[in-house]
Length: 244
Image (cartoon, rainbow, N blue to C red; front, side):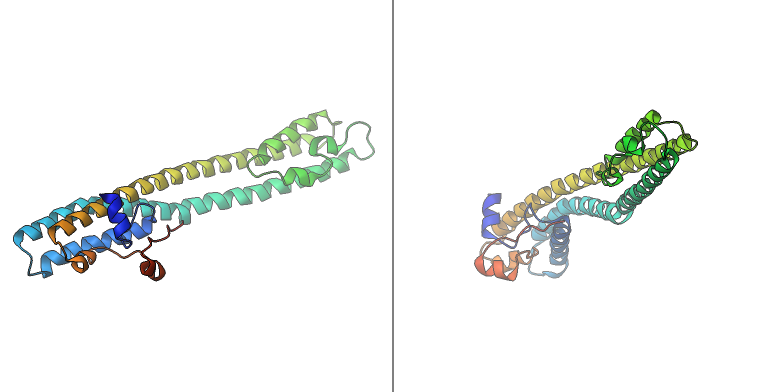
């Protein structure tokens, strides 16, 4: 039954639309039901009670979708933005520390017998600083450990402590970002579930309205947001799912 409604009515917001579109669809339908109660004088008391009951079913879904939408927006434009920027700046800070430690180690070991700075930092320091952001802190800590194999020099302990602090701080930033990703994934999953639930509710309402007002296709259609593009309306095809 629901599947048939989706095929027959391309305008109806389906389970693959974005949270934003579904919020608009619910708002349109809730507003139309409210308006029908107040303005459609040709409807019976029973019809108005029906409209009110259907509106009451949709109100909680609209409220839940709003909460998820705002939470996602707050994360993306607030916490998530800060966490990503912090990781990127932390990576630059870590890279600067690596380059400084490599240069000072080379200078300190110049002319000395034994292993040189390449043992700790590699033949090309760019290979270390260019490591994937998520794996670079561990690679830097491994370089710090290899510095113990080098001939003793005055700055070694200080350089090791500096690099360790930078790498550990970046690990903290990465962990916070990962936790943010997990929070966003949970919110997005909840949003997807609510969109599907709302699509089913709208499809069910469409069926009930069709049964209650047979042969009044335009009247029933007015209760729903038309989510089909102009081109797809001509073809009778459903809206392309929105991204993001």
